[in-house]
Image 1 (cartoon, rainbow, N blue to C red):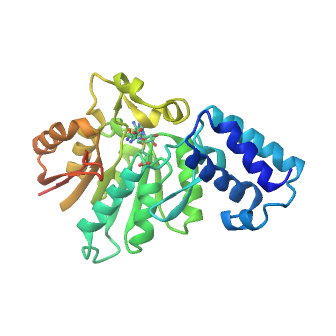
Image 2: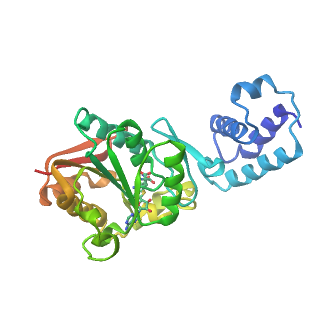
Image 3: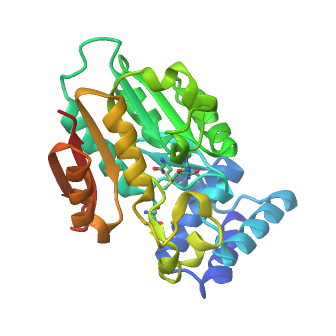
Amino acid sequence: MTLKSLKSYFENSLLERYPETEITSLFFMLTEKLLGKRRIDVVLEYNEIVSEIEIVKFKDSIERLKNHEPIQYIIGETEFYGLPFKVNASVLIPRPETEELVSFIHQNIKNKISNSEFRIIDIGTGSGCIAISLAKNLPNAKVFALDVSKEALNVAQLNVELNSVEVEFINANILNWKQDTGIWNLEFVDLKFDIIVSNPPYVKVSEKSLLRPNVLDFEPHLALFVEAEDPLVFYRNISQFAYKTLRTKGQLFFEINEYLGNKMVKLLNDEGFVDIELKQDIFGKDRMIKGVKL
Ligand code: SAM
Ligand code: GLN
């Protein structure tokens, strides 16, 4: 089979499930990963023969795509804030709205990093995308990242190496931060942070039916869902943790569920934060919030 006929075979196999333009870009993502050929190489070498082993790999990817598995898990990587990130089923695939959150943080801390004691912590780091993109762009900051999932932290560690940054990882459950055991008993809670950021689970279990199968069937539920009885449980706990551990004038940033903007303003107010700013994403949905500790 030539590259050209492989492309037609690939397109015909997926036509029922994906729009045509998406299929073409999926094909080129796979040629880059499986054959080391970029779009331009493929087009210039259309008549080259593809080996049997390589065809089998394409067929396997086609089956996975037919099942709605995200391409990022199939090729094992993605891009966030212009940086490469490895991903697998233990971590949420970083979202464009989270890039907006990182950019919002940058706008707010420009010129504020005066010394190497500037500390940032990312709570629920997953792939490490927030912590690592901040570390890469703020070389003087000391960045910490916390997650309850050891598997997620293993992926985040690979991403630290891939991006040549330094991040200190903490494996802990943020909902236990008031307990006097394990990590919470250590010096770590006595550190003072300048920035606390989190994109915690915020999809209510009752909103499950709104998720598409590529998300619902493949991404970690631990990263996505929060019990419907208390959808703000992570925000309340993290705000209280932040109130205790932020320095004066330290800033707290969250990514939020678009339906919880007003409730989040109230929550941050009730927890004692000032200069609260609710911000929309590029689709005009309430998606980010910032508060400052007096
Ligand atoms: N920061 C990544 C991002 O923005 O793409 C991942 C965010 S994902 C929505 C939420 C993360 O919180 C997951 O990695 C999950 O493992 C972690 N998490 C869930 N429950 C947690 C808990 N109780 N304590 C700490 N982390 C938790
Ligand atoms: N934005 C993600 C989604 O739509 C959810 C991320 C989260 O729960 N923090 O699936």
